[in-house]
Amino acid sequence: MSTSVGVDLSNGPDGLGVLAFRGVDAAKFLQGQLSADIERLAVGASTLAGLHNPQGRVIALLAVGRISATELCAVSPRELVPAVIQRLRKYVLRAKVTIDEVSDALRVFGCEAGTAIPHGVAALPAGSRRLLLVPQERLGEIGVADATALARWRLADVAEGLPQVYAATSEAFVAQMLNLDLLGAIAFDKGCYTGQEVIARAHYRGRVKRRLQRWRSTGSLEPKAGDSARSPEGRSLTVVRAARSDDGWDLLAVGAFAAATSAEPAADTAAADDSAILVSGPLPLPYLLPE
Image (cartoon, rainbow, N blue to C red; front, side, top):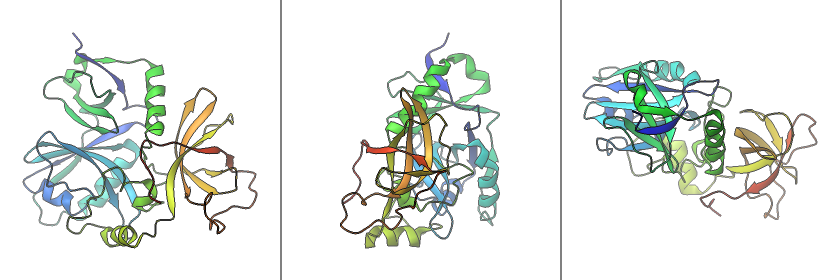
């Protein structure tokens, strides 16, 4: 008998995959590679984290959970998993850790925070909701929600201001452009990791001029990650993710977030671009952008 109902997030072009990090040095290794404080995670705890290049740009976003003292799992878009593994394996050196894709063994489901979670199934963060890592042999314990639930899940991701990085936008944004500092995905009091110097400089010098915000498009074409968009006052935006809404599309896009209130013209105010998606907004987010 199913003990919970979840949204299957493993399939489709934006389906999620799973990485496994195993070994006595697994947490220590990730501590030196990701922006969150991995070594502080207790067994059963999880966090959002970024994998960055030396310029502080986000290669991939990972929802990371500690499964045991020597094993951690991470969820990211499946299209990025092979590239993430290839990059991280370059830094293993003498560390006692193995890095493997386990997407075929663990399926990713989404559920509301109050949903009953079968014993032994790992739960990772998804804003106010959870991602479940369900072994193939236990799929019968999860009731699969219908397609409309998947559409609602994607819309909730946008409404909660949760960024995602896909192949089209990998290494396109510095961490703070995706509001990772506002989502608990950056630990500014931990040791060094790749990209840390750039990310810390932007934080302490307050030089983040571009941020992720929520917008709406009433066009018929679906906005895709990496597409260009344009705000009503001419701000140039880059689409991060989008979801179907009742009257078009809700989307998250990065652009100069203070342009509407600044006395100075926005640095990325765009000339007329027939290919840019026209959007309205910005719409409210559940967290505040810094002044």
